Structure formats: structure tokens, C-alpha cells
Length: 260
Image (tube, rainbow, N blue to C red; front, side, top):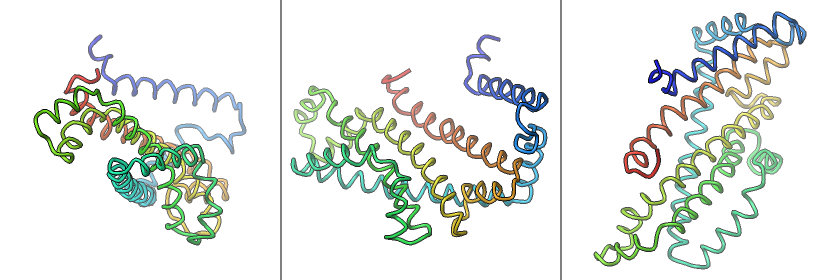
């Protein structure tokens, strides 16, 4: 029994059941107006209907497509900047300055500029997402490379590794915990920025993701539908954490003895 409880999935299922039970109690006590705070039964029924007819899956797919596109572009930019920073001290210092200036700037604060530069549409959303992902990932990659033990570098030079082999065979594996931490931070910030941007653009009817769906349902006071969207957003976050990041960590840094 103890070994079963130690499994992350079992713990999460238990916590979800507790949260749903508390939710049901709040609903039954009518702490909030029933119109604005539907019960879990109604919400899960709405969720099942929208999944069955495919409408919610289409919107979730549209949001996930934007996330993946933003991650690919951001990772490509990080790789380019890292190569340039390793070749030039000036570029390295410039990257440090840009991170200090731009990383604290919320992506949603750039929406007015994005609208003026790119118009209302996916290009503006993508710009905000890349900003949200790029700087935390770049920061963690740079910090990870800087904290690689000196002895690793000396061993690499001692056995005659080229600069490219040093980066691929020593720096990236040694800095992988920091790189994954940066990707996690960038993913979560991009997810929040994406939903927020879709809600803003939803007012003009030009987005088609989960954020737009939340905005539209709020306009029609479709509270069960809104709660269903929120559940999907949280579920996607859990799935990305467990099915992607956790598996990558187990296959790399845990397997290599760099973490438990």
C-alpha cells in the first residue's frame, strides 16, 4: 500500500478527488451564486459533451499548435544566440544585458505593441509567446554553461575534443538540469501569455484557441463551459509536466545520477 501511495499519479488522483469534493461542498452551500459557480457534475457533463462533439479538442489543438510553434522558434533563437555568445564575448555580454532588461517584462504588456506591429492575429500572439519563452530559456542555458565544472572542460580539451564536440558532449549534458528548468519556466509563461493574448484578441474575434473560447463563454454567461475550459487548461499543464518533462528528466538527469 505504501509503495502504491508513493506513485505520483496516485497522489494526484487523490488530490483531485479532494479538490472536487471541496468544490461540491461549496456549491451545495451556495457560497457563491449558483449561476456563477456551477457544480462539478454540471461542469464535467459539459466537458464530456464538448469533447464528444470535438469543439473543445479543436480549440485545444489550436492553442497547442501555437505553443509548439513558439517553442520551436524560441529554441532555435536560443541556439543561435548561444553559438554567437560562445564565439564573441561582446555577444555574451549583450545577451546578459537583454535578459536583465527584457526577462522581467511580462509578455502580455507587449500586446499593444504586437497589435500595432503585426495586427490582430496569430503573428502578434506568436511574438508575445516567443518573448515569454526566449529569455528564461536563454538565461538558464547561459547559467548552466557557466556552472559546468572546470575539470569537465579540462578533460574535454585533454582528449582533443573540438569546440562543437565539447558543447554537444560536455556542456549540454552537464547543463541539462538548468536547460530543462528554463524550458519549464518558458513553457509555463508562454501558456499563460497565450491564453491571455487569445482572450484579448477574442474581443475582436480573430483567435480560435482556448482563451478565445473562455472569452466567448464569459460573454454569454456559460459558466459550465468556462469551467470546462479551465479544466482542460490545467489538464494540459499536468500532461506536459508528466508525459514530457518528467520522462525527459528520468531518461537523462535521473538516469545519469544528477538528480533523484
